[in-house]
Image (tube, rainbow, N blue to C red):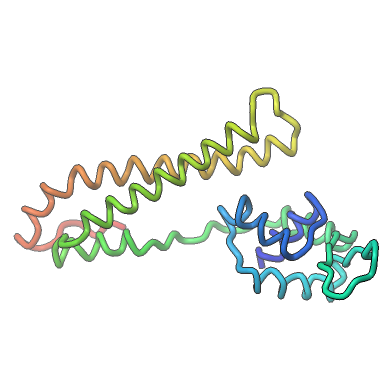
Length: 191
C-alpha cells in the first residue's frame, strides 16, 4: 500500500494536480517508487473517496480544467500511522543476479556486454543523483525536511555507487571465470 502514501507525501509537500504529480514522480519520487500516469489518477480517486484528500476549488470553473488536490487531516493521520508502522525489508529480486547464478552452470556467453550496459546505466544514474545533490542540497541547506530528503537521495547515491563498483569487479573477474566454468560440480550453496 505504498503508492497511496507516496501520493499523500507528495501532496503534503505541495498540493498538485494529477499531471503535476506524474511529473514529480518522474523527477523525484519515481527514483525509488515508480507509478504510471494511470496508477496515480486511479489512486487519487481512491484517496478522495476515502476522505484522505480533496480537490481544491477551481478559481474559475472551466470544463476540462485540471484538478489540484490537497491532503485532509484524515490523510495526514493515515500517513503518520503508516510512517510509524514497522515494516520488514523486502527480499531483493534482480534478474541480473539470477542470470549470473545460471551462468555458473551454463556459461557466461553474452553476459559481458550486458554487464557493461548495466554499468553504463548505473554510472548515468549515479551522475544524475550527484547533480541533484549539488543542485538541491548545497552546504547550509539543513532544515529538518531537507535533511530527511537528502538522506533518501544519499541512499540512492550509495546504491548506485555499490552497483558501479560491483559491476566493475564482476567485469574484471569474468574472463578468468569463463575458463573455469564447466569443469566439475559448482561450488558452494551461497546466495
